[in-house]
Image (cartoon, rainbow, N blue to C red; front, side, top):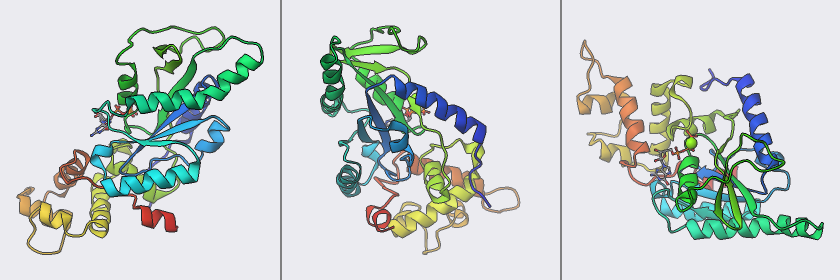
Length: 284
Ligand SMILES: Nc1nc2c(ncn2[C@@H]2O[C@H](COP(=O)(O)OP(=O)(O)OP(=O)(O)O)[C@@H](O)[C@H]2O)c(=O)[nH]1
Ligand SMILES: [Mg+2]
């Protein structure tokens, strides 16, 4: 049985829109979820971008396993040859790093324009990523200081709004949504854990059960301790019974339990966890 239901027509439309947006920028900021750097990446991104320079952000790093994030930063850098930075939306420490990297990545394009006899212009950048990874938060962070919209540019699509970040940098203020086309069901589950897939596309209890299995493998005892279970049987049923979530007839309310477990993870209450484990992903 397939876990996630895809809508091919919707994907084609999203891909077309993304391509149009990509055509008008010089540099792309790709946002990944630091808890699932592998599963929140888009396998076709290289093809879509062609030679466009890319800065990769491991966002929500405040929710991810510190040690794993360090490993992923290094590996993704080696694999993609792109600069990679870990970020968190409510912290501005990384802001100047992002701005400097984008300016640096856009420089060759501007130099090429000047060489052709054109006037130098600001580097145009956009943010792309899967749903819910923090694209809007990052855009807001970038434009915090400069709310002024620069309006439509000559020669580029009129509906697009640009924000001047600084004299050398213009940001497209709408993010590029990477379509959720994942043939890989394991990746799809992980995207569901981090709430990157609408809940109408999957079964919450199935997702929470998978989540329990995955967490028990990577962080043994974590759930047992967090939910204060008496033995090693960690299931929706045992957790629901322990919490006294009961439906009529005395049965465990597994649906409520599933929702609660996923919420505990998403909010960080379970701790800083990474679900794409570097050692496992790299060995495949
Ligand atoms: N803990 C934590 N939460 C974050 C971070 N970045 C974003 N969020 C939260 O994650 C949720 C989604 O963030 P958005 O910026 O709306 O993500 P998005 O990629 O624009 O989402 P869509 O527009 O739905 O595709 C919001 O509740 C944010 O507050 C982060 O670095 N750490
Ligand atoms: Mg958004």
